[in-house]
Image (cartoon, rainbow, N blue to C red; front, side, top):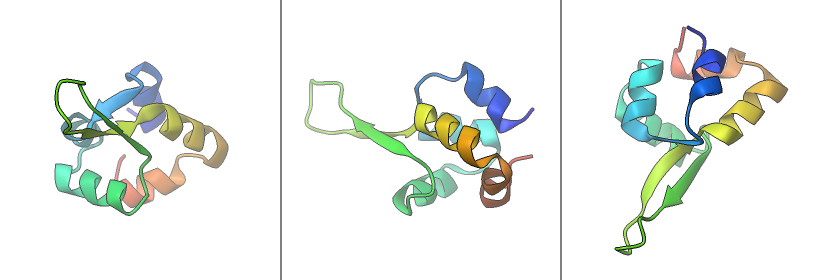
Length: 80
């Protein structure tokens, strides 16, 4: 299954572990790619605490893929 197909049904934001499992890489790779700016992300809080969790922004990633194609993501993430 192609990443575009996966993202069509994905929630707007996906936690890092779920995204890693979906594309077949480690969570560490996803974290590194977020910190390097290769994957769009958003930090959200549940409101009860000051801590935030960082999620992959699937909406922004879909927009990027629509404009730039899937080749970069396949090469960078190793997704098939």
